[in-house]
Image (cartoon, rainbow, N blue to C red):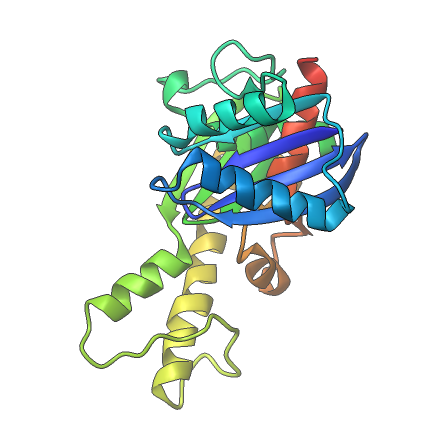
Length: 254
């Protein structure tokens, strides 16, 4: 079995694959203060609960955008599973050339998503990852990663609005009945969700002008489902897209 670990700014997402089948997905809160023993106890107790036992793993791969947690999860896998995980970074085979000014500065999650887009959908393609930040990643017709856009995530933006105003309440993200809000909550939902989608679709149009021929626009990430449901341009929603990309990279780097 293969264990894939995507360490993000908000969550650590763990996937367990048997061949190409994703058997289990687990989400842990990202916490740099958590010890290796705490992460180990939590992760493997959840795995045992899902499977009835901790299965045998032959391979593991880690993508991390939280540098302090990369060595922690590396040691965790080494001591618990007895294998050395593959780390997404310089030197790993991806099949995707990184054509940016500084390839070393590109987040590993963005490369993983680009690999998944190229292999699973074909190129040119655009991946939009709705996470703590919303990232737009572009793969050109040659199958190379040429860059993208990083915007504040919708939850981050909404939290900033609430924290910097005296009377606005915290709300749940949801699609409002009307664009013109009849009360404070619906007005905030309209601005946070409808307004955010307008930004996303506007950026998609700009990207398509610079990279003609994009047919595949894939959304992923926590709130990606909400926006893909109401978007006229996002045709695919893949909630575990990054995990699938990690599986593909593990196959490329046995």
